[in-house]
Each structure stands twice: as C-alpha cells, then as structure tokens.
Length: 413
Image (tube, rainbow, N blue to C red; front, top):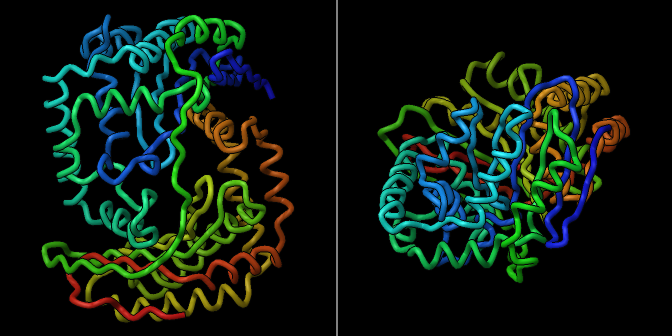
C-alpha cells in the first residue's frame, strides 16, 4: 500500500496514495463540517458556503476559477453532506500544483462578493424547489427529519428556503472562519503524485488556516416516528422505513453491511426477488446503511403504485421477520463477495481512492488498507448477521411516505 500521511504544523493532515499506472491525480480538501454542525437559524449555511467558495477570491474571479482548471483539461467540484464538506479536483500529474493553488485560494481567500451572493442565493433556492419537486429525493429529507427530530442531524443539507433567504455575507464568512481550521481538514490525493512534493505544496499554500475550531456537533439521538405527505400530483408512492443502526467504527458495521446487501442490496437480494420479481409490486426496492460519527441507520426504500401499497407492506414485514429468524451461509457468502468486489474494483479509480482516504482519516484518523476491510468482512459469519439484524429491527421504526395516498399504510413488526 503506497499510502503516506503527514500532519502539518497547522494541524492539516496530508495523505497520499501513489499509483504509478495512471497519469492523473485526484485531490482535494475534506473539512469535518456539514449540516449537523449548524444551529437551527443558519441551517443550510454549509451548503451555501460551498457554493460561494467558487464565486471569486482576492486574486481570481469566478470565471478564472473555472477556466484555470478546465484550461488544462481537469475538472473541479464540491459537495456538502451532513458531516463533511469537500472541495476536489482531478488533473493530469503535471498540473497538481495548479489544483492545490486553486483549492487553497477558494478556502482561504474567498471574497463573497455581494452581487455574486445574491445570484447564488437564487440558484440555491431553485435547487431547493427542484428537490421538493423530486419525490424520490425529498422523501429522504422527510425520513431523516422523522428519524432525528429537533436536532441538526435531521435537518436538510440544502436548508429551508426562508433561512437561505436570510443568510448574510457576514454569516457565511464568519462560519467559514470559525469552522475551516487545520485540525478538522484533510488534504487527500490519489494517483501519480509524489507525497513529499504535495506536502511541500500544501504547506506553502495553506498558510492562513486557524489551527483549530471550538465548534462541536450536537450528539445524534435516533428517535423514529412516522411521516405522511399526501401528494396526488405524483404517480408513485415513495416509502422509506428505517431503524437505529451503528456508527462507522462499531464492531457490528461489517455484519450490518453484509445483512443490508443480502436483504436488499442487489437483484439477487431477498427484497428484490420476493417483492419485485415474484410479485411485481414495485419498480424500485433496496436497503441501505447510513453511518455517522456517532450513530447510523438501516433503511429500506420502495417505490410502488398507490394500488399496490396495501399488498406490499405485509410482504415487506414478512421478509423482515423471516430475516430475523434465518439467513443462509450462501446468502452471507454472496453478499460478502459483492461487498469485497465493490471495494477492490473501486481501487481502480483515483477519485474513489482519494475520497476513501479522506473519509478514513476523518473517521479513524488513519488510512485503512483494503486488505483490513476484506479481513473484517471475512470474519462475519451467519450468527453475527442474524444478531445484528435482530438488534436493529428491535428498535423503534421510522416510516416516511409520500405520494397519492391519504393515510399511512399499516406497518408493524
């Protein structure tokens, strides 16, 4: 494993994964701040800040920021999640210096021009409207809020329109200065990159970061509950069901991942075979694991017709009950193989390796070799999968439903 880590004087961690078989480098800064770090009155500010970082610095205009990377055939982008914000690029190996300079510039020298801010505010409000008009997207925001009510983990990453309208330039600049610190930032790179050269570049360019931040997220408290939005204008009923899960570094994480895969992770999974293939009650159905720094969920999604909901729900309940009583060694082995192949195939991508490294440094404060993950998956047996399924399904469920339906479908384990 050609992975190296260096921690700079300002606390910023630089991690690289050298790949001599490629000509490109994926690289970027991952900051340990997202929607769950926001107070209610500034919900959406992390995402707003991510947009504004690209709208000009003291030395570059918004157009310059886009053109300088694209002039060399690269691309640059960003995203905001509940726990992190990432600014990343992919360039040819000879253009690493330019990419580091641009990312350092937007994270330290953004001017937040008032005219650009108003234009971007309009863009984000359109993004919120688009999400609200996309039922299989917005249902997950309702689901999250129902699982984690009255806390930052439940609030939407995009924020509420009324709050986004009220956020000021001072709000955004202050939030950036308070939260974008060396101690909660990882600069990750994967590809044809020299570690020592990258460390020198990052040390040279990232000179204005404060060393640490005092802002801590509030603890996650899964609650569960029910949500229904009757929306006659859409064709399908979107159903998301969730249960209290595990955090990233929980010993049960790998067993739960295997269970989720065999239960609803592919065309061979129980949910797909029983509910779509045998009964034709859904177009889309799957399970997923969401893990956070201090909690997580196991979730199930189904998109079905309003005339099929009443028939689908008891079948889904029956499959959950069956899965708590028996899983087979064949199912566990197949799910394990799916997860292992996904991990190993992803190692062929510089972008995936770059992001994985950053996440590992944030969660575990060290790179985690793929061999170690595979070893932990190999250690999971049928008993461990059954135990984690029984533990998770014993928790208070979260049920979120959106579509042309006037009452919640019956769901009880």
